[in-house]
Image (cartoon, rainbow, N blue to C red; front, top):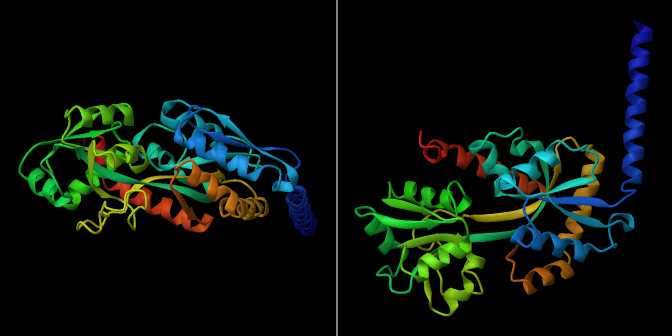
Length: 318
């Protein structure tokens, strides 16, 4: 028995020293960030801004490399990273889809299959109506929708925007939204401009041009504070709602990454995403910059997952 215990202790010591050595030498090659969407979208652009800001100034002179693995509403990319070797060399561009997909689709991972590294963007929900709409305020819309059918455009069933509409409806005792699920924000904009919907739930950055030129009207925005680009648009909180909602973007690694490697990744990412170079580049691209530390981002994702669980039956039609 003593020999067995001695061997076990020796094995633990070897494994501990090996892990420490790996962390001390990490990284010895470039690190890949998997974007679970095709090139050219908001998550892809944000990640390329990140990699350009990092250059070779971090990670012992190694680079961050973007790899697009789109498909399945991000499921293909999520699954690939969740199943990858947990050595810190394969990371994920982490969005609300990581929280939503496990509860709404048949997948082999959960949001706990990943550990967050930090958040860089929060694109708040914005509630917009056609320019000729009789709704001048969010309260006008709520009052009407309590008694009358309202056609609400989203960029797809079970998207973050559809979920935001359901949460608003639930908050005010049930609004008579009849959903028009489109395939993109561009199609939602067409619906608004053509008067084919009464209201649309969208990411704020996708509406700024049309709001500013007056072709559509914004009733409220789901941020903590008003947005500088559209300072006249009140927050949902100002309009009597408790919701702070939107689409988030950040980064994560597989949950199995060793603690010391994980800590190193967190520290390097924190330096990059709080750097002046990165923040300036985000602003130049009109990407709504919003920072959260790794720990705060994890807590936020956990809270979002819990909030979603409350409305999953509605989304599934149960």
